[in-house]
Image (cartoon, rainbow, N blue to C red):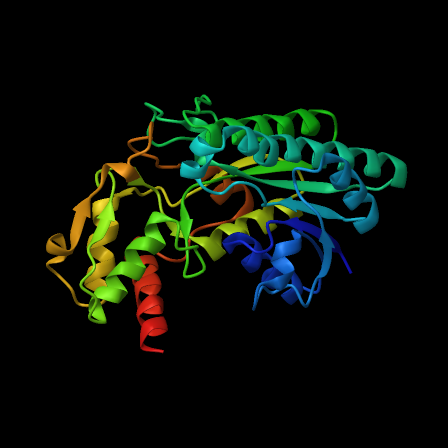
Length: 320
């Protein structure tokens, strides 16, 4: 039975990954914080949990030794670009240094155990910043413009260094990916929850930032499947994971409201400068040709269906 060590298990991607691994018969070990154990329906009962924190680098070394993994999936870290602006140091520690600490711990364990330990890093399109190259590929220059992007770039390049050292280490450059499990603090879920609330009789206006920003949105379970394919690949490498299509936040709002039969959404939506970030890429769109060709991956859910699933889910929650 293969054994995985997963960080970020309580997040959107981590929860889907654990379900996939367990369905395949894997033994799953997970890093969790103490407060995660008290959350209802956290999905932790069926995994071997190790209580600690990504900021504790010594703990991460012990964690790898104790869990003896065949594959480490590093999905944990700061997940919000907005949060990273308010907490740049913590973002660097948790999303950057922690990845390097896990890589080094995996390398040392691999050397002492005399067997391969594979590593899969959840990288981000934010490493490209406001790139003038659209779509972006694995060869697009790194140019982060946020503390989040900077930390992800550090971790991403560390993976390449350990791969050059002889480790089976890969990075999945994940573009925006959504599902009903996306936390309400993210703009996509904020939109679908607000649309559902309005359809249920709420009169509260939805306040957003820049509606013209464009993102490449995909279905989160598809992206988790890509990470699994990378872990099983014969040769380690870095891959852009994206749909190749970009849509504006305005498009997302339109699709969310249309999914629950509200066409005149403009009267329910306002602009609030508090939600405009200090710097934000205008358009992010990825070219996933490499992973399509090398590993046979492709997205299965299009943009309209993705938004519709989220909106309908939130409406069902309210109608309960």
